[in-house]
Image 1 (cartoon, rainbow over the protein chains, first blue to last red):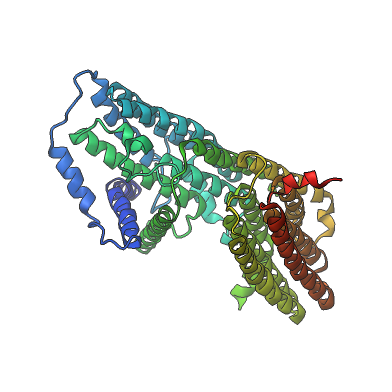
Image 2 (cartoon, rainbow over the protein chains, first blue to last red; image 1 turned 30 degrees about the vertical axis):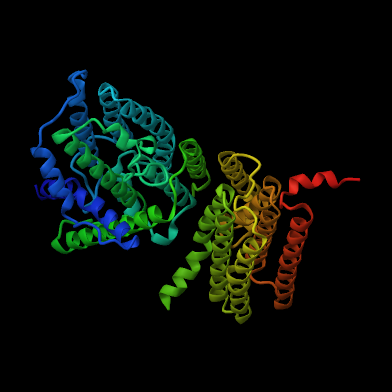
Length: 314
Length: 220
């Protein structure tokens, strides 16, 4: 019973706390640019405002246009329930393995692309085709990196992999982990539309990828998309933390254990947010034609990680 | 102290992983500065390994060598290379002759090759397979960097990577060579970088570029 309660709580933390993480990255970036930056709670006000507004739909579009953001939100929220954060279990931990996670996320992206095309704006269509290309290229390294870790743990379920990693010694980190982490970190950047691949704060439609795709959306639909984007970033970062640095995560349901797990998790998230902000401030966006190269390197690293699992068998 | 001992005993094995990452980073790097930083990181990992060996075997000589590695390879040579890039005013890209994706794939293949190459010697070694494989991988990838990059400065870095590999192989098979030999090797290295730096200047002055692949026309 308590396990379920803790699972629900950590799931709510992941889903409801996600906008703060995005605001934190924006805040650190603002500080680096010597601006004051906006309040950390600002995204909630934005979301509330958008939820209250009218949902404008292009006259040429079909019902799919309204349906797509809901599908995106639903699938991403399901994916969020597969990832353990504070305590070593997840709400839907029993329901599926890492392949489910990858393709549930892909399902949401697929519907979002359809919705963008349905809006019949030329920029949105361009954004959709770009996003489709990137997600097709990012799928291989994502799966390869996860497969490598799964082979090491002899488990397919993400919760089980995290439990296995928790039992390992920090110093016994193998080449598989290092290489798979490099691959998955590169994929995480591409999947969440962060800097070298996509610029989340751009104002020029020609350089947008994700932002171009949602150009036609407004009101509650836009709020859902923005919220989901934040949740997705949080899910991907939590997945990286869980797979490669879960140490500190609560293994028992005691108050002290959970408090330690919570503080360790939040600390790791803050560190990752600062790393992302510094990275985004120090590098320029890649040209569109360089993205396949970027993800090609990630694929090479993912393949290397899988091959390494055969060597590391001891 | 117990913790330091534990870290030292583990460092020898885990450091190999970081060496693989620096090798891959060098293969994927597109700018001179990235390559130089990757080389400095690689040397830092090497220094940590020397110090770990010194800690485990309690030899003062190894501490001195570790300090020398930090002084020369982690700080001195990267600084000199940065100066060189600055002074030469050459374009920052590394003139990779094939796409970085293939470069990373080939380097991954070389790492795999080095694992299979050292497989037969594992029984006679006291350290784990990874470290010897890392040494061989450094040597191979140094050679690969040398042929895949067209820029004279990159070939300096490639040679240094190759030397790092030989140094690591010597370290883990002998657990510290005599001091005089190590100092000789370091002297060689510094002289080599100095000479190659001068060469780079001469190449630039004569041909107005640093592209080694265009030097073929020199044949008589």
